[in-house]
Length: 460
View (tube, one colour):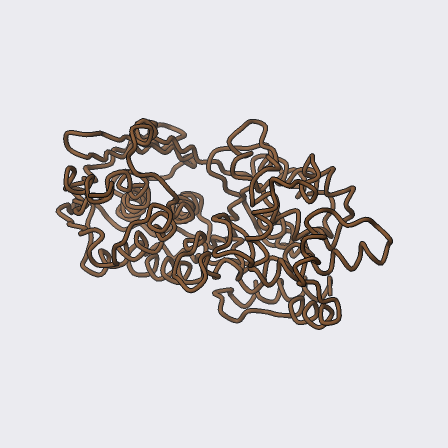
């Protein structure tokens, strides 16, 4: 019997017991209670800034949002035992909503199942059993909505979004979960005041870490779904009409060739459409959720981003480096390497080393990640990285530029040529096609589509 089967047998039920709201003059604190009977109790919490005169008591719309955020949080704790039953003793779930959550859990845990060698299917992996009900005294309370809420993670994508919308004269506020130097730096370099940024505080229950140390299951979860629901709450509290994400079309590509295993599932267009539908049917706030950069690939975003040089010294996209303060580029992970590669056609080698603090392209320890990124392995790195095609495009353009300038190629670019992958004779056509492409599978309102197309024309 493997761990998956063993833990399911020993822990047949995971319970989403309740959520408790504590309201003060300036804050709304929400504490969730999850339980694996006879094993563990989990109490993660959130704190949201409460605007003046906002009414919390009796607000059905807010209750639905807070309950849903708990459903998004629950999967991180459920995965430790993968209990066959997830009992929901609070809130309210229709049969259709149960199907919605099962899809998010299953697709969002694709990497978790793959890495842990778990063989299961979309029906049998969990049975979500709702037993709760909302207080009948609660009332729906629609807000008057205007302007944008732009989630900021400190990376190049959200920097490009806020810069473009700000330059177009859009009314924007920024949003982050907790605070990092790169997020503050992005807001500052965008020329926005400090109070433009709305920060929610998320506290993870460390009891889960202790279970993981004991051997209980661990792995990637659909964190961007947590971002979506917490941003929905923040937009509602602050009367924002649009939640403007910065997820790109490259996020749609499977991480494992030939399988539906996508590290970035909750950043994909499929999830974006699903969340958009969930908001309309069940949350009913009138907030419009979409990704501004969805029509673009990572390569296009990189080219557009570097034209705003002021962000090069402050942006960070490293998940490992984001866990220290101040946040850094660790220079040792596939995410760091990918960002280095995707920027390499547009900035000098000296500038790359200055940004990342080391010469990753000459690091033999990073070679395996490089081979995965260029599509010469079974799967891409399990990170938020671009498509294989655009990495190859970036590398080819960078090699051609360096050879034209008489520069010595770094280790990874020499490896690329030795593998027979360098084809400069076709790169101009590929480059032109990529830079001019606009993926029509998106949810951009017309006014935002016009802004993005205008920005593309300026750079092309």
